Amino acid sequence: MIRIGSIGLGGISGGVHIPGIQRSPDLTLTAICDIDEKRLHERGEQYKIPEDHRFTDYRDLIACPDVDAVDISTPNNVHAEIAMASARAGKSYGVEKPVTMDTAEAEELAKVTHECGVQSMIYFSYRYKAAARYMRSILLSGRLGRLHHVNMQYYQAWGLESANCPLVWRYVKKIAASGALGDLGCHGLDLVSFVTGQQYTSVSAHLDTIVHERRLLDGSGMGKVDVDDFSNILATMDGGISASFQISRFAYGRGNYQRMEVYGDNGALVYHLDRIPGVDELEICDASTDRKYVITEIPQEMRVDQMQSFADVLLGRGDGLNATIDDGVVNEKLLDGIILSSEEKRWITL
Image (cartoon, rainbow, N blue to C red; front, side, top):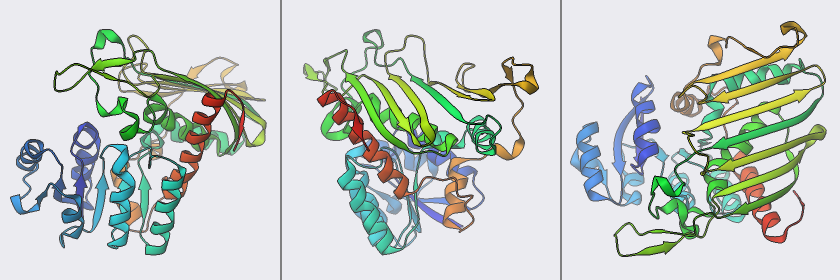
């Protein structure tokens, strides 16, 4: 059993990471860490973690001899320092996205990770959707011929004024680095590259903010939103692919909605997530479907689990489809290029 210490006990930890650790036959949760002592106590009781394995300082968790590898799901601004501390302690890590605040930080983390010889995994979680994996398999088989267009949408609704969300850390640049772009867009950008097997060559983008002030968490007044609420992105990719992205937290009625369309010489694929709540689907249109869009059955071997995949990486039996720190660097360069493009209103060559 690989003993996992989990740092950051917010929504993504309780909703994805720790349940996945508990499902895995190869992982066991032995220590937890959070700066919120109340939350730390509650989660400690929930997960039956002994009090002497509940930490408020991530350094103490990393130093714990009962921790073999580290799971990081904190706000973005501390991803790099925690992951580097883990690597320097000789402990492999999995970390949420965006991996760091900018490219320079990502490159430094990659350098330390490689020098220390530890394994890394970036949680681009939509790589683990069966429909996305099947889409990748079809595209890389050449069934659609030469690819021309990819259109990606990622929509949520919790930014709308009617949702009354306060100024959580995702709306603060010094903690989040960017808004909808880093929160949602980095997933979409990674997913398109993942399914096509191609990299980005240039970008042009428009980022903007819709709600400029939100109520402070302590109720003392209003605070400034200094990150993007939406991003519209055009991109060129290797192989002559033209890609477009629409990313927003202001899409009325959407929960965690994704739609990706890929068009080639010989057919098209449409990936859906959350068209039916919580369900991922794939449509195929080609000669075999009489040029009609048909929901296809997804092979069982495409169904994988993110945290079990982390275990497989740690055990040296990964399938090669997991994002590493090197993929995190590529993604950060892309995010930085998109932000620069929006600021300077021009195409950026990557």
